[in-house]
Image (cartoon, rainbow, N blue to C red; front, side, top):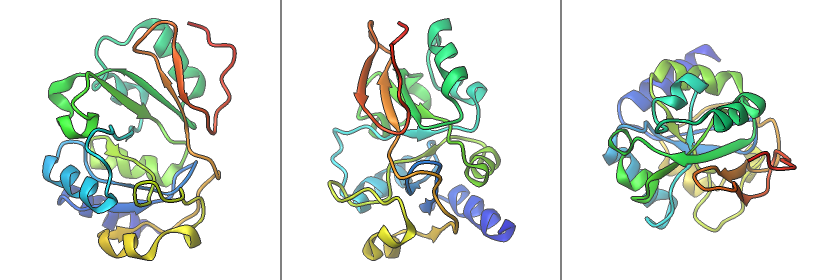
Length: 195
């Protein structure tokens, strides 16, 4: 497996796009700091440019480099649910995240997956990796390898072997407003909201 992990890191660092298992569902992504790769990712997924993309990080410390002035209550939320199936939307450091990845909004949705190989890949890539689900826009989200669309697999540069830890996309919570708002119910149950 290590050779395949090294290959995935190498492809990402050379601007490629990989499909990978996570702790929730299959994801597809590229480095956060390569605008051309992000554009290609949007095009091959047929994702509307008005939709921001979730971003995967390897630690809370890495997340803090991309969030702007993370408040204590949001950091506590990260400590409670990360690594895991919770995507947290908060104000971003816009200069570090290409506009397309955040749909030119002021916020970014970050998540630290609970998946050892993927954390290793992100950590050794050195920057966060975009992590939308590995499907064409509006198609079924794949929880198993057999559910991946072969046409999408052909368009990616590499598929990291492995299995997902769950069968449900992450819960998404917007902490950029008060009270916090759950944008999508998914893998993590949050209640009551402590904001």
